[in-house]
Image (tube, rainbow, N blue to C red; front, side, top):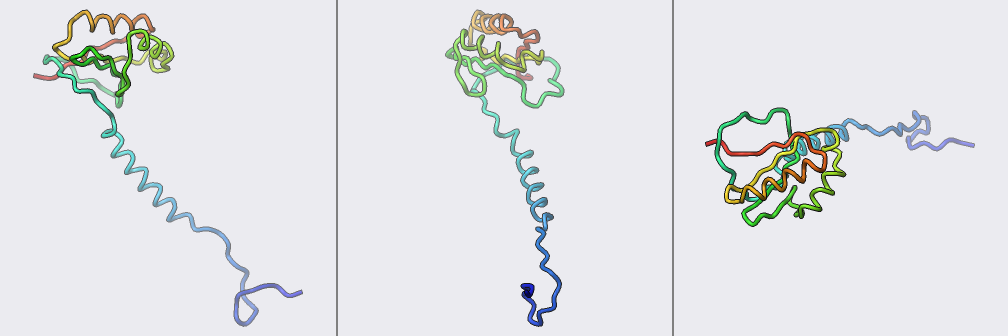
Length: 138
């Protein structure tokens, strides 16, 4: 039996059937860089008019767990609305709260103190130990 070959003279080297992965790796690295650059812009925010004040800049956090309270006392996390009971259930199940990560509360300056304290006490009941209030620099 003869061997199959694609050479004209019939005496060629066997076919080289490996795939060159260098272009694939190059494309994947470019996609990785694109996603790393655009990911910070994908975070949804709620229109909250924060009070102004002096304080330290948060350090080392890329995407902290932020509870937002708008002018209508709507409680949201990353665009999802919660009641106080739903917030407590969500935070109870959150691995970030269980790991002791800080929670940030951003409340519109027109909202009453009681609503903010209700959210903070609900977070504390759910196991949060580090609860921070956010403000804008003057």
